Image (cartoon, rainbow, N blue to C red; front, side, top):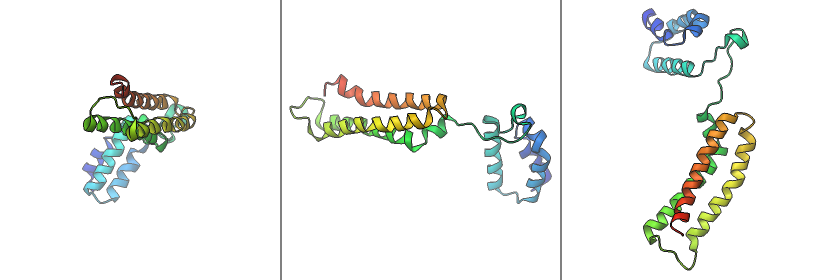
Length: 165
């Protein structure tokens, strides 16, 4: 990789990061091939460093520290995805039933109602597991995920309640 490109890629990082690691990183880039994959990796890492800085001079004396837990990392956890998928599946079950059979109330609940009820009840233990695991670790992010899960649950309940199914 040429020196100008290595310098340009290094300049994408925040100033404090460059002050600490810039020269070493430029030397590292100069020793590597200058292919597109390397450029994209550096650009992605630089954007990540700007969003979630890993250098904290006040607390750690200039040492690298771990990334903070973000909403995205918490929502991608299986303990969050399972109840979200169950709520969205319950909503889809109701919507498909309405599309196929209409919104008229039936004398017998039928399989659709039983599937919906099972999905709604089965979410509770999954929500409990999520809360126990993530509320102590990342309360702010976990509350955001819980709000998303509650919104999905309410979306699944709304057609049943509003259409008296």
